[in-house]
Image (tube, rainbow, N blue to C red; front, side):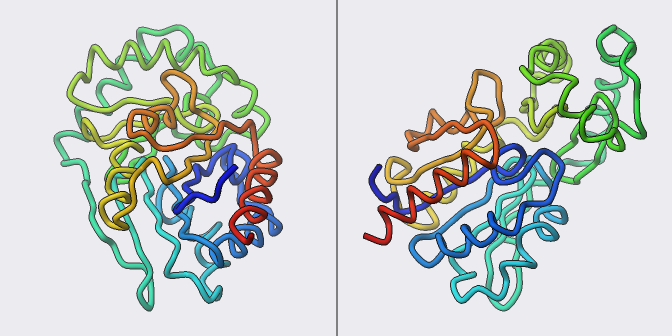
Amino acid sequence: MQCPKVAVFDVDDTLAESFQAPKPEMLLRLARLLECIPVAIISGAGFSRINDGFLVPLEKTPHIRRLIVLPNSSAQAYTWADGWNEEYNLSLSADEKRQIKIAFAQASEDLPLIHDTKQYGERIADREAQIAFTVVGLDAPQDIKMGWDPGAAKRRIIRDYLLKKLPEFDIRTGGASTIDVTHRGINKSYGVRWLSEKLKISPGDMLYVGDALYEGGNDAVVISTGIQTRSVTGPAETAIVIDELLSVCRA
């Protein structure tokens, strides 16, 4: 491995277990990596969750300005300058949100794999720039979320259904049991291209690390940008990748 000019990471099942905060040792690795190169977090998670889990613990690191955050599948972007500043926000309109929520309701009626699944709390999370649909419910225990659709086969069925109902939107599988919807073309590849322009670095000189680089996964869209990729199955493998980066980038 050669040292990339930027390292880009997914969150769920990459830097942290799905819907969980990162481990202290992962935060320490990120802080060390920021000493060497810029780091970006591109996630389907909303800003508040990333802020609580990653940003607050990292804000005292001397190289915090090198950290760039693109939540809601790159529908928003934040950089640091004496606090987190929003670079852009591609929020969905009220009518667009209503349209998306109606499509989810129809899917819940039409697809047995949704209406036959036990639901824990609300299924829909409105993050302004993204609507996220968690089939087992937002309040489901962690083992339920992780075990419902580990291979994403069920969510691909739902995604195919929604693509017919919502052809003007981007629809991706994310996390362990979630489907994310944003404006058409607003996905993680948009974030990679935005980073490339902002930092004046070719995507080919950047590295993306994620667990959903499979077809239809919310990480797979970055491949078209020409960015280097590294597929992982969870935080343990990500830790190994960061250790490799620290080795080559400190050389």
